[in-house]
Image 1 (cartoon, one colour):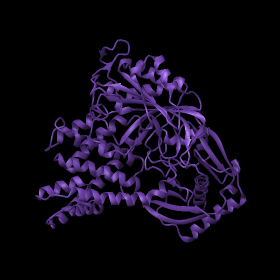
Image 2 (cartoon, rainbow, N blue to C red; image 1 turned 120 degrees about the vertical axis):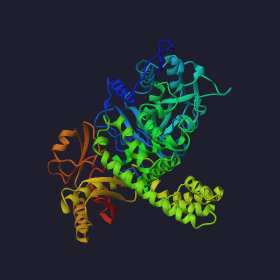
Image 3 (cartoon, rainbow, N blue to C red; image 1 turned 90 degrees about the horizontal axis):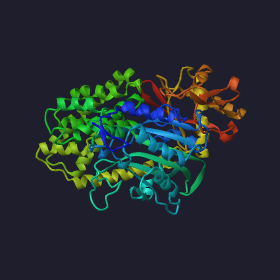
Image 4 (cartoon, one colour; image 1 turned 90 degrees about the vertical axis):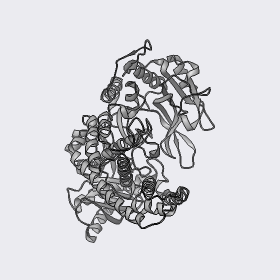
Length: 601
């Protein structure tokens, strides 16, 4: 295992673990005035536009839009992310659903002239990657925004020759996490793995296997509005991202993420216990799917997600079941593959995320219960298939919709009976189902990433009122377990092992509206986390907060009706809510957690 020396291009034994790379990255930027902030939970707070945090910038959207971050204008972190958009691609050498994104941030502080050289310095001096192995791309420009000549010139000054600077359009060199919100041009850095062109037009981003995208610097200077137009943000921001898995692989001299130290132990365990099917060398895909999906499941469960048929829970259920199907293909016993693989996936993260070590029993229990449930589901599906003479595409889709059978499992079971499945008929039924789901979800996701409209801002403040009222009327030990806010309503999960009675709901609602009629002020104060905890400010369950936090007060600070850790946004006074709060319904989430919905009328 080797890395490429920056000075000579020669190789030397310079293997770096993922832990060392993460540590070097954080320290490099801490030495340059950045404050290290903790990873936000995988489930986004008050952002209905996405199920999981999928990029480092998502938890920081309020600050990219102009809010003052309590830790300052230079930040650095390692953010947990889950992306499921390309879940079908998992199984190759580098796609993942869960990953860590290393990122450094400038909130209206430095810009391209410092960001690009620091990225280059870290790669070539800290990680000792040869400059000869690096190529870059910059934004080519269009009707929305100009060609990024400034970034290209900085790269030339650093020594990247013009022939290794590529100009691409929005599909490659423009970053936005949603249809609205902060966005802007970016410059991407690619590592040349093989130095072997695949053809005359070989270039970064063509997926030929030659280039590894190792870093991305996004220059967030715009906000895309609801009508699709761009407006300049109050500050010029920098958002960078470097995938830990990919970088670890590069520095290990490997071409397969699943052979780096984050997966090594668990991969060896899978190889040792597989009883049938291909070896890893012959067909690595099933092994990679198991490792990737189980790791994502571990982190989702540790952040409070439970398997279900909706939202994050549905994604978790799908990940566990897909991993289980691949284990079946390799002849592994359900309990065996899980118990042998889970410890090896957790071990590399214990120091960075100690909560994993404390909750490993619960994680194992949750995933095992879902495996057991799917085992019973498979038996039900087998019983249905056994009664059929033929499994057509519609039946295959019914098995998918009713029993959660992925097509590949139906194909496998049908093949065992000597039957064929009409795949095109299945795809047609599946596409019709997806279109209905998209239509039903259109209203939920219309706000884009972290909607900060006036409606959401008002409901965000009402959310604080609701928590305080529940504590004062129902139980002072109530804490928030999760939340979701759209432009139409707010939703809060909180700990309570019983249903609220009608009288309690009326009292909670009346108390909130009484405070609105009093027109209490809403103020923000930045203070140390320790000070905020001492004054009894409310915080979200299991969330890891930085040393400096924003606390919002409803009412006079000394006798506030509500005081809560929060990044905003909020109204300035309760009359700005422009109405009263109505509690519309309550649900049982399970495990002593209730869910309540409310709106402003």
